[in-house]
Image (cartoon, rainbow, N blue to C red; front, side, top):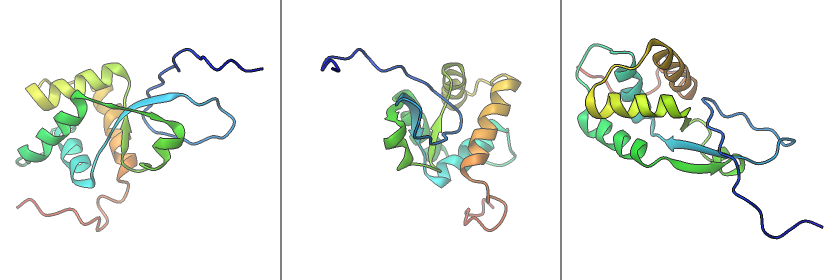
Length: 132
């Protein structure tokens, strides 16, 4: 018989969420981003040319300050928009957005890959507004 009182579920932050039905349910820490927020964050992480949209990055910073907890089931609703990060990636990304602190090359690579996975068609008519 299963006890009605359970301890806290482990938190497993990951870069890209994959759905399985056989794994026990774990919690994920992450932020749900709009396509525009994903693009601006990707440009910032990769130190792209051009002016950043500060309003968009302020919204991203607010989300990074208070990441949400998701189960794998609830995360499925946000597939394609949920950025889940390791704790060191989260801290580095927040420092970049808030204080323009350049993250390590490893963080840049992993966060860029996670963001690109969220918007794979960015260069192929993805509807991104022109910046200039």
